[in-house]
Length: 463
Image (cartoon, rainbow, N blue to C red; front, side, top):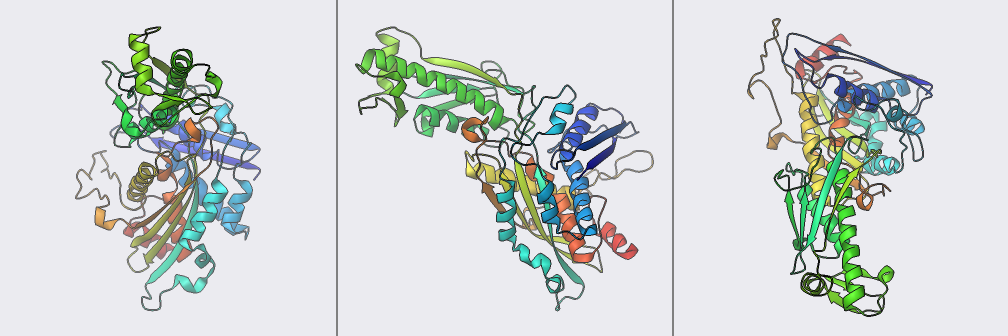
C-alpha cells in the first residue's frame, strides 16, 4: 500500500454532541490497521431534521472498518491476490508506529503510540482452522445440489480497536487490609454487567496472594469510592485494572515491610512474597495476613495498612481480531442467513475467560443486528418510522447462529498482568466479514447496511 484516503459524511441529526469524537475514532480506526506512507482523512458532520445520534458500542470503528475491510478485499481480488495474504502483507505488526494516534486524538491532541503486542497472525490461523477456511477455495462447495436457490459463502475481516482513550481516561482504587486478613477494594469503575467487579478483584487477589473471596469490592458509589472517568471506551480492565494493580502492590509492600520488621526476624523484604493468605520469607517461614493486620493495628507501629492509586495512560494498546463468517444466501428472496461466526481475538492476557467470552458473544450478536436487520427508517419529514420492536428487528435468542470464540493469549507490557481491552472489538468486523461471505457466495458486493432481504435481492437483480 502506498496511500489510504478515508472520507466520512455523518448525519448527526439536529444536534451533534458526539459529532466530532465519533468521526475522529472512525478516522483513527479506519487508518490504523494497515501500514501506508500516505494517509488522508477528512469528514463532514451534517445537521439534519432528525433526532440526534449518540454513542454506541464501537463508536465509529464498525463503520470505518466496514468500508476499509471491504475495500481491501476488493483491491486484493482485482490484483488477483488472496485477500488474506494481501491483508497479511500490509497489516501493522509489533514495533510499528500507529501513525494516526499521533496525528489526532479523540477531539484533542494525539500522542505517539506503537504496537507493543499483537497476536493477529495467530488469530488468523486459529480462526481459519476453526471455520474450515479451505472451503473458500472450493467453488463446488458454494452450491447446494439439493437447494439450487441457495449459495454458500465464507468471509473474513480484520479487527483492531483500542484500550481506553489515551491521555484522557483515568481510574482510581483504594485497598485496605482488614483485621481478619481480608481486603476491602473500592473502585470508581462501574460494572455494567461486563464482570468488571470480578476482574478487578481478581487483579487484587493475584497481587496479594489470596483467594478471590477475600477481596470485598465496592464499586461506583460516588459517596465513598474513588473517581473513575467512566465505564466506556473499552477502558475498565486496562485503566482501572492498572489502578488496582498499583494500589495492591503498595499494600503488598506495606505487609512485607511490617512482617519483616516485627514478625519474621532477619527476613529480607526484597525476597519475601505473598501467597496462600500468608507472607513468606525465602527460607520458608511465614506469618498469616491476619497476624500482620492485628499486629499493625494493635501493637508495634500501630497503623492501618492501606493504599490508594490512580492510573492514566498515554498509551491505548490495540487488541486485534480475525473475524470469520459463514453464510447462506437465498438468491430468489435475498435472505441472508449467517450460519456461523468465528471470532479469534488477541486481548493480551485473558484475566477471566468466562467474562471475556461473554463480552465477545454479546458483541457479535449486537453486530449481527447492525449487519442484517437493525435500521432507523425515517419519512421525508424526518419522523422515525421504526418506533418499536415490531418494526425495528433485533435478534432473538433462538435466532443466534453458532458462534466460536477463540482467545489468543499475548502479553501487553503496559497492561495489568499483560491484559488489553476486549469490550468493543467484537462489534467491529462482523459487517465486513458477512459482506465478504455474501460476495464469495454470489459475486455481488454489498455496500450499504443492513443487508436486508430486499436490499440484497435488489443488488442481485442489478448484477
